Amino acid sequence: MSQPLDKIRDLRRRTAAGVMDCKNALEQADGDIDKAIELLRTKGIAKAAKKAERPTSAGVVEAYIHPGERLGVLIEVNTETDFAARNQEFRRFVRDLALQVAATDPVAIDRDQVPDEVIDREKRIYEEQAAQSDKPAKVIEKMVNGKLEKFYADVCLLEQPFVKTPEKTVGDYLKEQVAKFGENIRIKKFARFKVGE
Image (tube, one colour):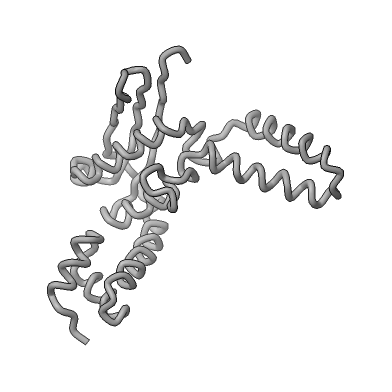
């Protein structure tokens, strides 16, 4: 079944997906734009996973200074081409990431970057807290693992709820951008500065 051009245009405007992808998604969703958006997001996240190993040699460094000039963030985000790095939407995405770092003070980008001594310290604290509950060892282990998962969600940038739309994580937001730009995007590093710290 052929889809009306205005629906294809609307879907393309809302998702930044290609014309044929929009047409196919609308056909699969029987013309329902919301279902088509969901299909495109699912497809985009799958594509993003395939792009994760591609090299990223272009990118930008963004500086964010919070009003009052007592808090600032520097963040480097890389992508595959200079074309994407100079795109205004990409720059907006990087600025959103800088705002996220300013607001949430993550320790690392992902779990692999959290120092072992920090994980060991947190695990010891959680084990001591759980031991006071007089629960069986298996239950204590589950309690400790649950608290560690919560800890990672608090301190790992990619696992944090995104401040502008908390129902998705920063990692989900990153995957959406990979799908939108059709390139691998990697958060390389960040630094957060606060007066007096």
